[in-house]
Length: 286
Length: 147
Image (cartoon, rainbow over the protein chains, first blue to last red):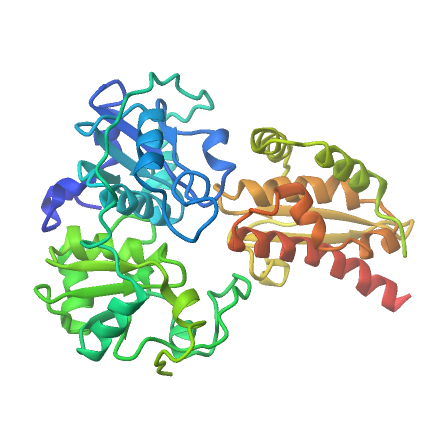
C-alpha cells in the first residue's frame, strides 16, 4: 500500500502507518492504545508501551445501554495516562473496527487528537514488529474532560426518523443479507434479538469492509470516492448517518466518510438495527 | 446422561474457580500457547474445505481420525493468527476429547464455551467457539449413529 500522504485523504493526519508508530514508541506525547473484540489479544502480545481500552468494560456504561459519562471518561483517560494534548493512536483487530469505535467514543468527549494505525494489529504483527506481553507502568494523569457531546457525531432514534423522513443520506454498513432482511444478524454471529429484518427506509447498502483492503488497511481516496460518491451517490456536503447492528461496524464507515473523504456532517447511529428493528411503529424497508 | 470426558471436566472445574477476568485471560492464553496445529501427516494447506468450521471467523479446521479402539483423535488448525480464543478452545478439545469415549464427547453441551470464556464474551466469539465445539461433537455423534 502507498504512503498515507499520497492516497488523497481529506484528513490524512488522522491515519498513521505502523512505521510512524514504531518511531514514536518512546514519545511521551503519544499514547498507543489497543482496542479489540477479542480480550485475549492484548495480553497475549501488544505494541510495546501500548495500553488497552476494552470496548465493553471501558467504553460502555455497565448498567444502561450507553457510553461512559464525563466522570467515567476522565477516569479512563487518567488511567491510561493521557492529557487533552496527548496524541492517542488506536489500533486493533478486525481491520480496526474496534479501534475506530474507541476513537469515535473519544471524540464524543472532544479528544480529537486521535489517530488510527493503518492496518491495525495484524499488519503490525505480519511486518514482524515487536509484540510484548509486558503491560506498561503508566503514571496516571488528572484528565479534565468536557461533558459528552452527543450532538455532533452521534445519532439517536428520533433524529434518524426525522432524517429519513427528510430523505437524508443513510448508509447501512451491514451485510447485504442483513440489509435485505433475509438475515437478522451478521453471518457467523448469533441472533441478537432484532424481531424485524430489513433496513431503515432510504438507506443505501454498503458493507463496511468495502472500505478496507485485504490486509486491513484503508483503500485510497480515489477508490473510496468511487464507492461512496460515484456508486452510492452520496453528497459529502449533506448530513449523513451510518448504522449497522450496534454501532461498531458503522464507526469504521463514520471514520472513512469523515476523515478520509472529508464529509462535513456524519453521525454514527449506535442504536442501529438492534434498536430500530425492535422498536414499535418505526418504518422498515425490505 | 453420559459423563463428560474427564479432562474436560477437570478444565471445567479449574475454570469454575476463576474469579477475575485477568485470571481467565491468563489461563486461556496459556492454553492457546499449548495449541499445536494439525501435523502434515494428517493434512497440509490448502486444507479441504470440508474440514472448515462454518461460522468461526478465526478460520478453524477440524479433523477426526479413528483409532483402533473406537475412539477418535482430533486435530485442529486456526489460520487467523489473531484467533487466540479458537486456539485455546482447540487445545482444550484436543486434550479432552482425543481418545475419550465417543458417548462422552457426544454429551458435551455448548454451555461449556461460556464456562471457559465467560458470559460476557462477544457474540461473534461465542458463536465461532460453539461451532468449533459442535464440529467435534458432530464427529462423535456420527460415529455413534453408524455403530
